[in-house]
Image (cartoon, rainbow, N blue to C red):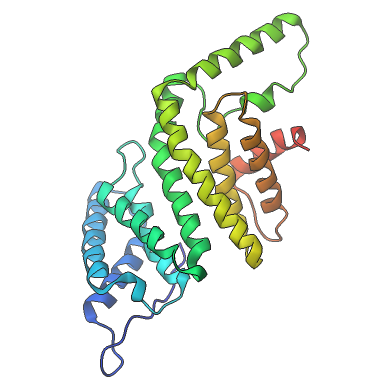
Length: 271
């Protein structure tokens, strides 16, 4: 994660409050940390909570640094909050980040970053559910793997038996979409897709669309498609393919191996 220099509010003489400066530096250290040990993670969580108390005291929205700097702070803490997919979110940090994105969305200049951050938050909240669905079903139901049910139906079948097998598999998959995990996953992924859509619409109007936001929005749509009924999920897969095509066409931008493979495999099925 790139570091952004954050200018902090001044005191007489031009110096920033020491506690605020230290809190910003602490967030930079969290972002730069590469340790995955449980001890290091616990220290980062404690540091993050202390930084949040300082940000609340001095009001993060009053930082005179750019929107990118404020988004960097919130994104870093949000990634920490959702680091452990199986263990669930660190609720207090995750909720603080959600609140800060909502506040930042009131700033017209910050709305792209804020809506993207909200999309990231909802997508991150869905990951433990998607992982559980994947484990229970024995086949992928998350945005990180799996064959789209509706797009897959477009492959030609060589016999009526194969057709019946495919229809049976689709019916079983559709039945699963009524289960509690699938319903809850959709409840998280629909706002993820909605916020990414708003972020992209605003970025489009500003001429600031970039590959990362397109790839993230594609993942959100792929995930939602995979937990939705085959009667209506095509639109999510089609949107994901369009986003991936746009991202791959940006000079210098490289999709992740998985997303590139997904585009290669299924892009030919979408006009």
